[in-house]
Length: 257
Image (tube, rainbow, N blue to C red; front, side, top):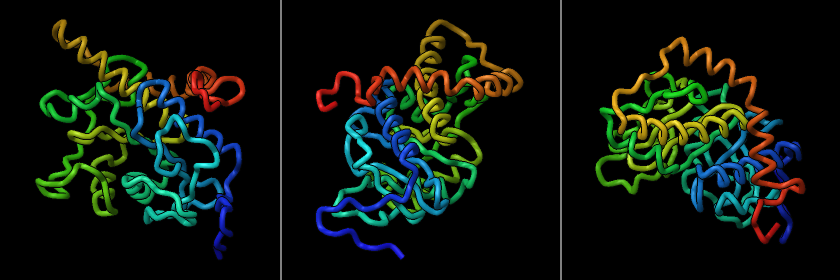
């Protein structure tokens, strides 16, 4: 049974400290790589309780520390909030975890090059080079009007909308959100890799389309490239972590350390 923390005490996470530190690093990497800014969030499934996940309190990702990480149930509600504000769109995470037992991390971002592909539906976001082979021939688009009607604020504010988004994601790695952004799923390092290279691929695809007809990866190329890259995720992670966090774990260039 969960106990209430005393006044001024941070609620216990009951999670491995190394996992919490990885989640902090993921927040900072995504900021440094231009995937998130003051908005966006990343979560990881709890290592001891599969019906929970870890997510920072509502704040800018680049400023997240281990003290800001909270535990949530799969209904999207914080287990021990301790008076802290939480992200409105935490239901993106909770409902993807509910729908996808294979998923161990979820990222929601508004990375700028991805946005156009969610609103120009006749031009699918697809793998233009080997680093983004996971995108394959087309990336699904979530249309919030189908679930919330024509007058929403575009945010995933409840479980119903989160479940609709999870259905749009299906068994894939990335889903676009029309007029909003995207969500990426996988394990933590893999999801970060996918979020970064989804943004890069979108930028390169737009540049290539300006030049002329594009030759995209076919299904076999995409599958083989993805299999190769899956063995190289740590290589990218370690570089990104060093650049974003520094040797002492502090965000590069952040006076807070």
